[in-house]
Amino acid sequence: MNALPPDRPAPAQAPDVLSIYGEAVPSRLFIGTALYPSPAILADSVTAARAGLVTVSLRREQARGRTGERFLSLVREMGVRVLPNTAGCHTAKEAITTAQMARELFDTAWIKLEVIADDDTLQPEVIGLVEAAQELGRQGFKVFPYTTEDLSVADHLLKVGCEVLMPWGAPIGSGRGLNNIYGLRALRARVPGVPLVVDAGLGAPSHAAAAMELGYDACLLNTAIAKAADPVRMAAAFADAIDAGRSAYLAGIMPPRDMAAPSTPMAGRAVL
Amino acid sequence: MTHAHRQITLNGKPREVSALTLAAALGELGFADVKVATAVNGAFVPAAKRGETRLRDGDRVEVVSARVGG
Image (cartoon, rainbow over all chains, first blue to last red):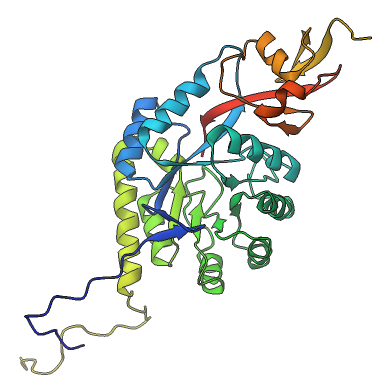
């Protein structure tokens, strides 16, 4: 590629903005709010992460209880967009009702849809997931489905109106990283125009960088930061890793090979 | 005839309320000025409909609010 003449400005890079359901999301790191040692560390971690959004949940409130309001204030002060979840729901019906309650309480149509099949693996119950996604779509929700790398499930979710998919890397809270890189790569190739967020099971920033290098659009993680020895420092590390992985993807990673290819030219070696 | 009390379940615990509607029951049960969302028998009840939602014996009421989540 020819260099531009020095008196012309370099072409501006097209801004690399993540857009989901027609809205710009300011960063590609989404983080959960659970399991932190304290509300202060949570708030500092969200800042250090430069989080694009945070996930929250709904749980039973006590009479005269202020926990919910205190948490809502904390979240508002963070100034970050909120994505409520339907964690703990095992059926489409439970998830739909939870989403409706979340929409009213958090005043957003965005919902992280979780329908869980098994309490050990916390794997998505994909049939209920698609049902719930369809019904919630009809009710005007913007659904972010927590799913697997299964291509046919992805196909169904897109058909019922989802405009983003959130496949797991590994079981929630397992810290294993990307258990099925081949499956995730296949999914990325199958739906090139769809925002894809790796959600669940990440443990180290290198896992997040790997996901971004595959071309995933964002990562959602909670335990990896909250359960780090230094959550605030880990949050910053994840933010940096996601930036690096995204840049690498845009820069075009060299193709790997099995045998060596010398970098230093062979021509002109001294014969000694 | 309207019975004096209704036996309901609130957040999994048996409770007795004299209130006739969900809105009144929330007041009676200590949720008057707490920001919550509600469901009765597994179905969402919007805040605006609580005043017209009559409670019956055996109703399961869930009252939730914002919490941390992943």
